[in-house]
Image 1 (spheres, rainbow, N blue to C red):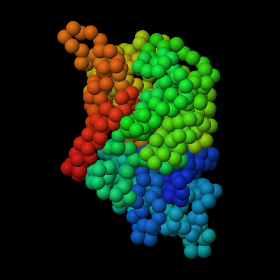
Image 2 (image 1 turned 180 degrees about the vertical axis):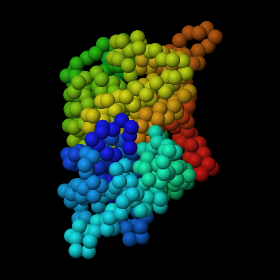
Image 3 (image 1 turned 90 degrees about the vertical axis):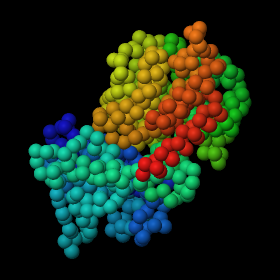
Image 4 (image 1 turned 135 degrees about the vertical axis):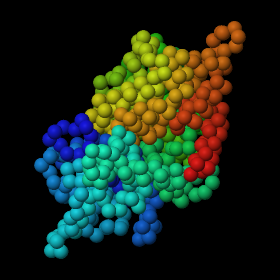
Length: 516
């Protein structure tokens, strides 16, 4: 389906579904690995959607996870051969493909479309042991929102082929289904963060949040990431919370009490011009604190996630052993050759925050060159390039990724303001570049107490606003970001930011209901 596909391959669109256990997300990644082992190429992933069972025969089952994948395969394979390989994967993963059509399933792999054979119907002979049927396009796509939504994630670069029959190409079929979904989307993707029962939501986008693999909805549910630096030299709180583990733990408890649902622990300053410390030194700083915080909040009913702010692979490995939930990588995998391998091989597929930057802190200011009016587009283009060139080849799926546009990283003050004003363009750029579900991934923004925020409220004297008095400006910037596509805010003053986030969520929820 993609123009850049290799000649010996054909494209195909498939769907994945699982509702068998709390390891549903793990099952998705196991299926991806087995598809690759059997000769398929993973080209593009949609987002992950959680859906309420719709069929009356299965309505008492757990919710399903759903997604869609664009696959490549050797040209000589028939679509029936592809299906047989997928059924073999289902069996290997523990599904009884003959007796659980309506029951809980570890994995359910369906072929929705095919580029090579765009219209196919296969009914097994009555004497065949293989009872599965095949119809392409899949016969029930139009009635299933949990299929239409992932398809729409994959079709941003597509449009109708006006030179041929609009009904018999994979691109045309997918585009038609995406247009059908966009007519239904606002009505179906309703949220219940202020009224109603979460169990009544029919369909919602979800992402990994905690390492227990219980995925979480994130749209119109803004989360605050509380900053906890255990460093001597961070620009805002360096030397304050690194004196002892108990001091850091008390600060973490304070952040959670004030409304943080992510505690981001960092052991190295990444401010412009900062000197780098070794992975061993960083581990020595953060490991004891991470252990204490992970243990403290492991069973906390407030559902607190622990993040490690690092660009070192060795730190990721240590943090994974301790039990962190999120990897916050400001380097995009560029500053340590072992980083992406470590992320790819965590014990469970942890959330990974993919950030935009241009070079390490000692040289980033030299790389702040953008055309006026194109900062957000360029950020999206460069995140796309990083994803396709490094993240995906490292076997880190888009399903795991959050995105961070990198305020202050290789961007001047004026460029940061422009980026904030045009933040929606980052997602639009990701979509145009064919990033699929990554364009809908949670977006974290970190602007708290940064110089560009403070300087938006300078007085007539034009003097820099001290970092200690930038919180009001930071909160105002956070509201702008949340109203333009951000889902999480990294903040020092958590109580203030949690309050403005609730206001932004209330407005977004009301707007979605009145526009539906």
